[in-house]
Image (cartoon, rainbow, N blue to C red; front, side, top):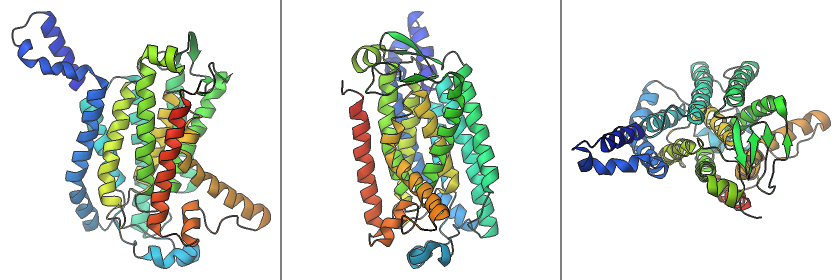
Length: 385
């Protein structure tokens, strides 16, 4: 809305309207930096205002988080048992404040913004149904794994097809050459690494599913997932902003450029603001959990952002904590099925460190530190050569 107010004012200025000079401050609304900052502050403020009300409502609805049994939690059953009954589905607040901020501050018809928001909503709905089943059944079992995977697969296919077949989102510039969305790039290379052609669609689908589930697996300690989300979102907001500017992207940084990419910055900064607002209530001891409603939505949207910016491989570094959590589960399950032995004391890996003697707060803060470090490394790689 802010940008369209600017366009209305600019048109009035060009036509010599007398009132336009008095509203010259509306010129600010054309700048992505201003609108992104406004979206961040707006989402944060709304979260602080709505948070207590949402927590109260969830308590009245008895939407408490079921905790896995002692046989599954092993040595952590006592430490995490006190969390039983803490309101879940707090991801509704994250999604809601992000969408409102984006609608107010973003150019809502921007194709990159549309597909990112839609992926968040679609996967957030899946997470909500999963959380709702857990609350109703008073069990840690929600939507079946098959149903969840099929839903994620459907969302991934739609996102990939939209980006692949839309002319505004499928064409980029890398250095001085045109680049298709089917090509894979990495900051250390001046050109694309490989052109996957139509195989890029299943690649995008796998990325969306993997990112969504990785954030979901990370959401096991108070403030852990949302803290890492804030860091990753900040890093990619920088990348999205730089990728929109032709000279910076093509001549100085040698990263994929698309003139429509900048609006993703508004989405990401709204997510940062919503993340800080949610962390206010989610820090240890948590008063509310994001649940699958938040984690699946955040993971899917971050995966979509990585695709839009053509920095899919860089997500492995910047989102390294998410990757580490997901890989630890894959290795644990694979090792137990193949060898009958566990690699870690417990997976995801944050529980391994808890069982190793780290206090929950130590695990959280150290993982935050690691996330910040990896994000700086990822951003540093953009201008190594």
